[in-house]
Length: 121
Ligand SMILES: NC(=O)c1ccc[n+]([C@@H]2O[C@H](COP(=O)([O-])OP(=O)(O)OC[C@H]3O[C@@H](n4cnc5c(N)ncnc54)[C@H](OP(=O)(O)O)[C@@H]3O)[C@@H](O)[C@H]2O)c1
View 1: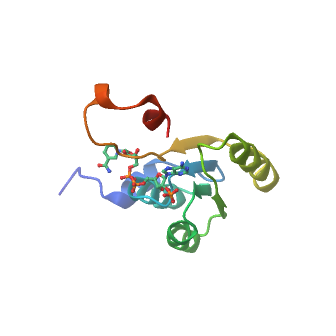
View 2: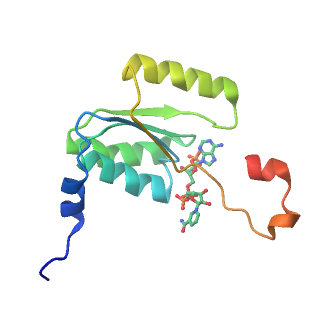
């Protein structure tokens, strides 16, 4: 249909050539979709989560698009692990241009019944 954009048009519109992007939750549903869109737009990626197998699936989707893709295991509730991740990003990319923070969990129940620890996790 005239005037309508498809997925590739959007990737073209969003030029991210050589940008370095950290995607947390890259092993999950939203993180995987965003990672592949970022790779299509030209970004280099650091993909972060805790599950190696699911992260590798995301990386396997992104790498054929020709970008640099680094996979890093990190529990984002662990400050020491986050410090190590920052050091790794520094060594691998030298800097970051964009953070896409998709890591999270979906709790069930009422907000007022939810413990602060669960909201932080
Ligand atoms: N999908 C929806 O319709 C929807 C709607 C509203 C809000 N959200 C929220 O958006 C976020 C992403 O949704 P999703 O559907 O992509 O969820 P998902 O498929 O369950 O993915 C969650 C991601 O978060 C990562 N993660 C969770 N805890 C982590 C931790 N401590 N350290 C590092 N990574 C961690 C998981 O990786 P590992 O398990 O490998 O560590 C996974 O990659 C969630 O917070 C969800 O509640 C989703």
